[in-house]
Length: 491
Ligand code: FAD
Ligand code: MLT
Ligand code: ZN
Image (tube, rainbow, N blue to C red; front, side, top):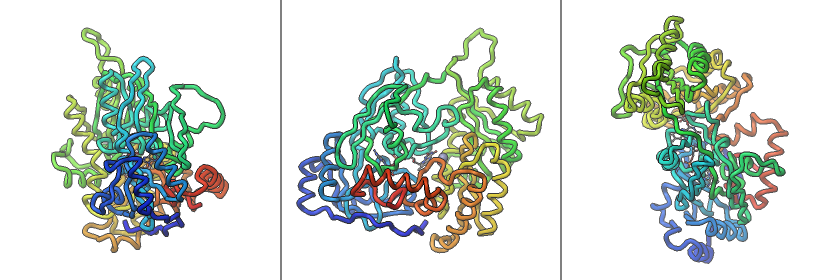
């Protein structure tokens, strides 16, 4: 969508020819992108709705190089936009149009440094692709649970800096919960070594937690020690048509006990999203014969392998029994349970491709909201009514992590509309949704962060006290305002 946010004041010191040579001396030719064509993917966001500029894209290969680059920028007052996989949905990794400084991409720092299967941890550089980390853990019979649609291209530095959520938060928590130690290059170029593989550490303020979710405004994460879990050995995936969000919440509520506390994911989807995915994403098929208004994708997993000759049921058997009971109660209208890994993947593809299908369909507004799980049933119809009141022809696209109370309460423009046609409706629609979320005691950003897109909303919906503390933190830790300036909070 076109930017409705007024660009904040940011430092606009250019990268002079002299500074460029100093950067080249630090990172070499391989670490610099100067041509407009080479820089383009780094100054445009994933949705291609926001763009900006940068004099240079700098790609250091080590923490030492990163530190020297940041120190140089600090001395010269040059602004830095940290970037990892550039899949963020709030424009946090995209420079503002007035930006003259650098984009600092961590993508060349992409080594897994060690895996400790006994201590259930893994030490990695921040440019590692999330899927690579999942695969590395699996190769050691361990499990790294962060899982989201962009996992083939997002990088762990970006995941940690956005405190990413995804589809397994229900069981394992969001990114913040998956980290033990961090290494961060501070805005003055100093390196903070917080690489402690400790589960317990109460020595003073928790600096690690400060950088997790800071969206690159307080420093650059260069390494992390991640927690690992035992690898699941028994899985069950089901796709259920349910009559309402109320039924979805009740289905989940009973599933905790029925699965013996093995629920890993619970995702809700409206029919509109399924139609978009079936239309745009090749190879996807509708698992059920009839169309329904709402669907629940549920995953159960256990580290206990099904044992031959053992009479105790597999998770799939237990899930089948549970869904059978739920059908009798009217909570489920129809359902399928995946019998193979391929069938499970096909069901997940219907869920994970919502974002891609929505992008291909045309303009949309993202409302990444959360309310208490028990408030989802009244919130959904009220939210849908509010959206329709603001623009009767709009197409609500509601899906997401219902088990966390986090729905992507998105709004697709009427079919065939252009961005300029849709633009005047963005503020009224979002305002109506966010006011409702606030009345429900919820959050206007459950997992994607603030970036540059929700600057005004953060300022509007957070209290003066909270904003003052955030501003004081930012000023204290980044006195020259060079670290991702004009993102998250105006200083
Ligand atoms: P980037 O986009 O490069 O950066 C994100 C932010 O972090 C920016 O503010 C940037 O400045 C900062 N940053 C990046 N690297 C560093 C670093 N090393 N140090 C300091 N700051 C840094 N998000 C979810 O939470 N849950 C989902 O389920 C989910 N699904 C998605 C599905 C799709 C198809 C897509 C495209 C996106 C989805 N996202 C989701 C959003 C996005 O993938 C996540 O926010 C992800 O964590 C961003 O990682 P990245 O490497 O792409 O970061
Ligand atoms: C997802 O869960 O797929 C993304 O976070 C949602 C979105 O694109 O709004
Ligand atoms: Zn999500």
